Length: 331
Ligand SMILES: [Zn+2]
Figure (cartoon, helix red, strand yellow):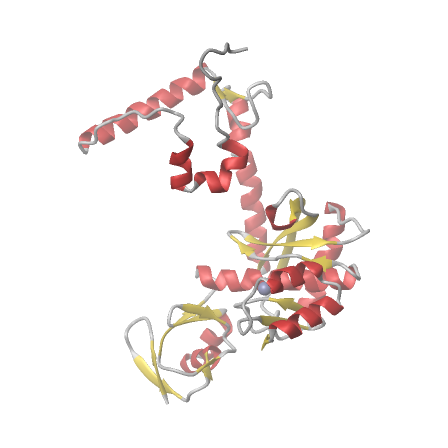
């Protein structure tokens, strides 16, 4: 027997090898329906994975970030499964869950995937989800993984596998689709009831501009149709309140390519607003005894190397300014 400790401190005993789903079922069948993933000693895992040791245990539902993450990550796999059926020979990059939904980076070869194609892909996803296919996790040796994905011509996956440590490689399969993946995932695609693919964008493989430009498909899914409807209304409302739209309408700021993209110039009304905000902040900070200091807007390159900014953004925004040597005139 193993001891399972719940977040409220209560402890129950279960047979070794019990799964998260079985634990949920032992509490209530309703809970077993709502639960999406579980936490075992701090690690989020599939509900179908056996637990073999005493553990601090937590169940994650839709309301939990970990639950949503498993839901959306599984949805990314469902998108890939649909694409594999609709675009034979398509190659897959990465397909993570993100803050709101998920995306998958794909290389459709000769084919072009446009926004107009998204409804057909959504329909295929819904058709596949209705099959309630189980997600099956498998540990696989590095050599076998390279062979398996290599046979399918999956060069992007092979590149990822070649960088992984042998002994820690897992795949997840649902229906005819197998992905290189660490998980965690839902036990099946059944809970994915409402699907919306939102947009198509270009994205360089691994974010490197000298690599292949992939097609990135963004989407979001929900366990209930009503939740999707509400989300789409919220997106429309957010569009109305977009700061770029409001800024223009209220004459708060303007942009010109002569200055640079994304660099706002504050107009009189916007500047007045900004000063009021700054005054407000100053008053609050003074109340809490903060003192103001001022720093130069630029600094030595080493500062940005130390902070880590240079490694991340150096190419785009932290190029050193080279001043002419003494004695030479500035042209
Ligand atoms: Zn995955």
